[in-house]
Image (cartoon, rainbow, N blue to C red; front, top):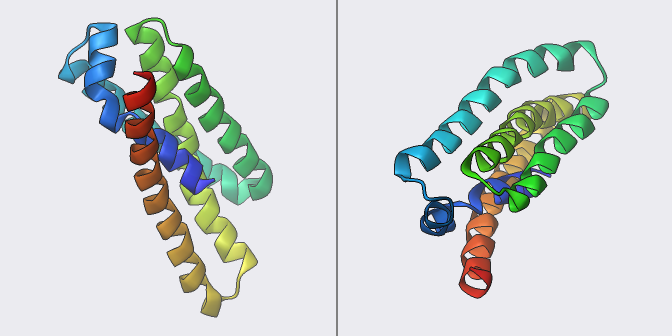
Amino acid sequence: MLIFLNADQMVISPNIDLIEEEFHINDAQIGLVAFTFTILGAVISLLWGYLSDKYNRKVLLILSIFVGKIPAFLSAFAGSYWELFLWRTLPGIGVGTLFLIAYSLVGDMYKHDKRGNIAVILSLSIAMGSIFGMMIGGYASSIYG
């Protein structure tokens, strides 16, 4: 899921010019979307960190995936800048929560001598998602606009 959430996050990067043209916005406005995504994810992760110590982490993981992916899917149907802003900001909640819950689950599921290896796999997944997202976004925009 870290691959998919990061791929979705980065699919916009190669398409910023097309998005700005379609919604008649400037760099500051598209930057505000990314800024709000990041801030929302960071702030909400504080709450979810607390919740992950109190409630079932697997349930919270699934919930964070839905919270992150449903708005990301809906962003494909945005008809205005403010719709795009909403649908691209809300996935910050999913990304902000998925990271911390994934690493917490590693602590729950693996003994201390294996956690480093698993953490490397999680970190690699984040990087792979970013790369795949930019590749897919650039390829798709060259075909579909």
